Length: 392
Image 1: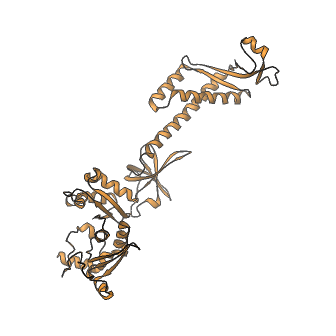
Image 2: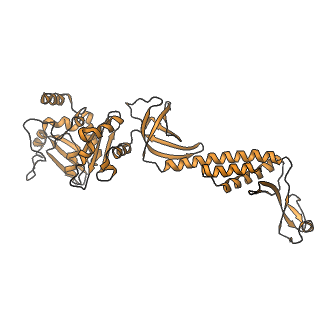
Image 3: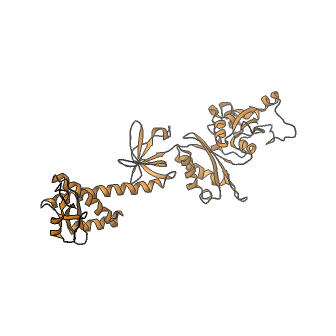
């Protein structure tokens, strides 16, 4: 073994973080295999490598016995004492059996082992890096796509974005830059495999942490998220600081913060509501932008009956039931929405000694406490007409 190889191993130790001793042990083991394969030898051998001067020897190990049965594995006590008089029965004699042509084989074997170990080490480092980033957001570049997956370059590794984790309305082209959420990192025979998502609720959480300093610093906390990726999402927020408006912090001046997140998610609409441990208040908030007159709670069934003004029934339910469905996911409560008229006919509203959550209005007001981005694409056609009439 040349000193050049030793220098190369030392350089690899510094650059790749692979211990030179580990590489030397791997080379020694590989050389033993190479010796047996190339020289049809079956005896017990080991390779002795001197890392200081770069020398290498193949040593055959033989047991010292009284009567030799296999001269490839055993040696008589008499022959052993010709080498060293101190030998006894049961000792092991080592003698050099390095072939003249073994140098070339050793060089090839060492190169293969080093290359393999460097590759394994690099894969291990990549795995360690990305397994620590599970449930985190990363920037990637679209590389290619097939019928089932989209492949995104994260720099050191190519991540897989399955079709089920893609936003349906989005189109991806090579070299597009996108943000993705790491859902899982696995070891495979071809190296670490990273799986990412664009639909996971965690992506929305991480985007708010990036965009809203109050969330990143822990002043405002995101409690729950309900998401229908690419279409609409609801998040509930909470703060223990009385002087901080959790909703205003997330929306930002003129909606700049939430709009930046919406744009990143293909113009996904985002409702931000205040979390409360009181299910009556929380469910009422979750049905925003609709006003709620009353919330009746069944603790055993974990269900609620919500009474809304007649003219806001469509708004509370939302297109294809989306608003009510997201509110139920957000709160963890079943929600049955009834109009005020139906509730009066059923005799469940108004309840005695229970004040309505909001004062009833003669004319509907869709602007109060509601930004336009929270309302659009949720209203039914007849409600949209009312909204436009009021705007005019």
